[in-house]
Length: 445
Image 1 (cartoon, rainbow, N blue to C red):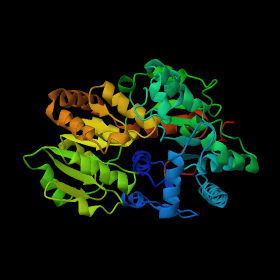
Image 2: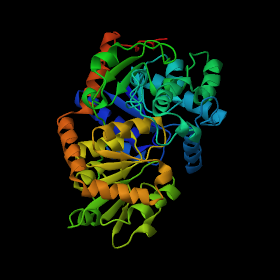
Image 3: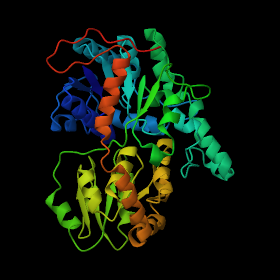
Image 4: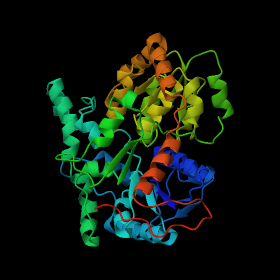
């Protein structure tokens, strides 16, 4: 049994979990989901899976507080992601579900309580949310100098120094794990060494390709943790290829009509952002000679619609992106890879290091322009979109990358990696209906 515990506040978390679960189910491997809820939790059942509701259920207020905590992550201090009682309750609920199902492995993204519950329950943890922002990549200095540095003073440093800081500083950040480690000590389980520990499980799925990221599979798999890049002892890193959302949703008629018109379309697909920021981006982006399609997610911004702007809710981006001339995304790997697979140039507005890396990878491949979110409300956004729509080199580069992605099934590869990794640990996950092989092997420590 493979148990998925996605953080359903984030579309990328749910979509990746669904893709891997589908592939495991196709191989006859039993899977299950648990979730505390969130704005995208309904997509689990829409994909044909049943999710066990877990306590404490999230609310719009706790979702907002969690996002604020992510944005506050600093070198030594950070806001707590939960109240202490919320975290205790979440861990207890997850442990109970793991034990009731007899789970052999838990797969999660940024569901932080899972880092504790899996240790308490004695089962291994696989993660997929770090994307390419994992210790081997940073150790090989592949992260770019940020366009949105956490400290504005960093912008005054020489380029080579800023790049060195971008690759080394994340390994020194401990603030985000302070609350988890208080509870780890309370439970008598292994604490996390720092923020990079939140990017890795016992099995870390790197959802990228060696030829686009620039790090060979050999270098990824042979890398071993050492200071300052400390993670869980025994952590295994494996490539899966791109893994992004293919939501089983229709394209609304008004969106289809806009995409089928004579004018180029810019697709604004910003998930997990504030309503105010979304409004700022739409206002700046619609100044050009193109139409806009806006995926508003859970935000009520219908008033932004006009004769050149179509506003919808959650959209199947893998169907919309290929028909757009350009896109605007934050820089999460899911949206970046959807654009790359679609052959669609884009503007990336990265908030943090993981998004900086994703957009910089596409920028290096010639398919994207990276700018600070602070520029989203200026003329720079419109100018960047005009370049993407008007200069054919961007579309040509995007088409080339899409050809590299063609035929790569990240979900299927991730499923194979999971099954093979468990087998090497002496655990065989038998098909649904078969007699399971007993308790899973304990997580390495």
